[in-house]
Length: 186
Image (cartoon, rainbow, N blue to C red):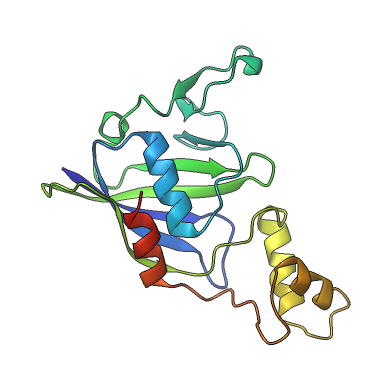
């Protein structure tokens, strides 16, 4: 079987940032994490967790850490998607970078009989926020700065983003070809 998910960043609009993914139901949550990373353009530099309604709701699926004390985290390498996702319209939460708190809503749109070997990104919208930009508030600020070349922080932000003098940041940019290619390699 295969799952079709819509994964959308919460608290981000104008434009919204989401990806539609087709994923084998036998993928582990760790592999699903890597698929989401590739589809959005994240760099996989931070911790993550999956949970029903957000940070620390049970069950928590991630990378167990003995330093977390009593908090029980199921190993994302060992839990398959089909053990958690069982019905259409089921929602779950994926949080990436537990400092910036990029919260994504995962909606299971379809369950198909298709036998997939690889995941695919089949649609999407919006440019993924840059790593370490300060969560949804920082991203909103970044978009405001980058939309105003006269803003006092414009040049500094452009340099931080690694943009040349002639290149601009486009919050609405999404390349399905690039997402399809990077997800297909997972």
